[in-house]
Image (cartoon, rainbow, N blue to C red; front, side, top):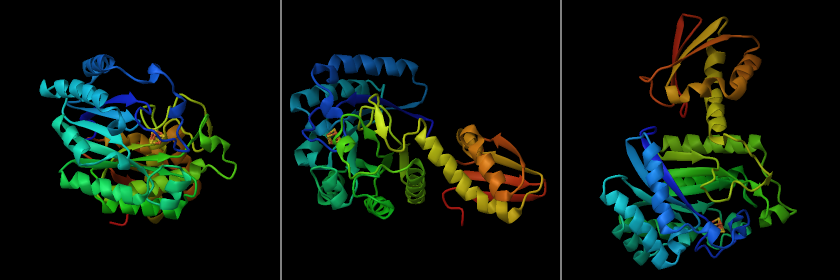
Length: 349
Ligand code: SF4
């Protein structure tokens, strides 16, 4: 499915939110500049459709809390999306919103306009973390929203953040497990960044997670979600997500390609024990899915450096991108004689 599906992201900043989460700077966006008109959304979708090559095209309203927008404007946006859907130009329509902005009437409206997936900005399932982050809802609100969405047969996704105030690895991974137990269709994972203009920037007691801690915790979350068969649609922030990424990042695990960074770390962690066991002396031939070939060596060959340091010797790598290899699997041969096969998300299997 990945690679065949393209999402047209429509960013609607903070509109309708009414909250001021400690990590969010969208309340600093003022005036109409942050509020796209239905006409501008129409043009944006049209221009995206012209350049998209993926056969499956979806539309997503991201940013603030879609279901909290003034109802008339919400319907105008949805009418634009539905017209493209009715014309067969896009498939699914998804929206993102807060868990406490979901009720029966809202769900019915979304369904009437062809929305088939709601991404819930949960961020954490830990009530203390939610409270310290000034989310304005507790974990019960998440359970309630999911229960309503399930009752109405609407698919849902979950967005989680790592490193919020009061959060730690144990709490974050508990949130991951709570999310898995709800069986969402998809998930997004974000490390917390300290953005200029947020309350988090002024919170002296807060210590942002390091890149290494965020990488390790996110990698473990990816493993758990993958094993549960939950589609991970993003690791790390992008402009169309919860915050205005153009603003200055003051602290936190900022990385220009955090998702790829986490994935290459996962490949390293899964492959190293196998390499140690098979003890290569000369060269390692590897076949991997083309979309994941770069994860073997990592950015700026960091994994090769790590492998060589851990093995105590230099080894030649020959990496072949092979579309017949399934994603998250690696096939290889050590020193032209010993074959191996490993599943990155579940290396013990
Ligand atoms: S993160 Fe979402 S809910 Fe929180 S203030 Fe920003 S837009 Fe509102």
